[in-house]
Image 1 (cartoon, helix red, strand yellow):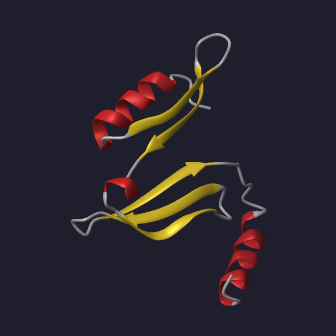
Image 2 (cartoon, rainbow, N blue to C red):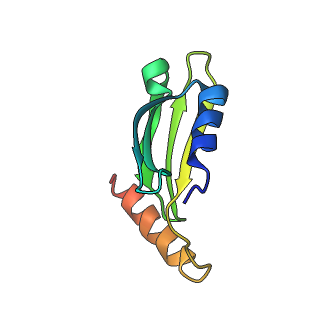
Length: 99
């Protein structure tokens, strides 16, 4: 959870030119959800659509119009070191099958 969402949104606006598409406050006035307009709308090309990865991140990649590759991720779950090898093996199996 982002504790100071307004500051985070302001940072993304300044650093990346992000525009808020939607912002939903909670009853106390803190932002509990926001959607940002980002790289693809600005001309980047998706090279890896965002997907949930075995290591606990939602991860994707884009290439900007200048040829720079950007990896964009958000942490979605904590994966224990004990569970990681089995998850990686399953992911590699799915990749080999073309999924």
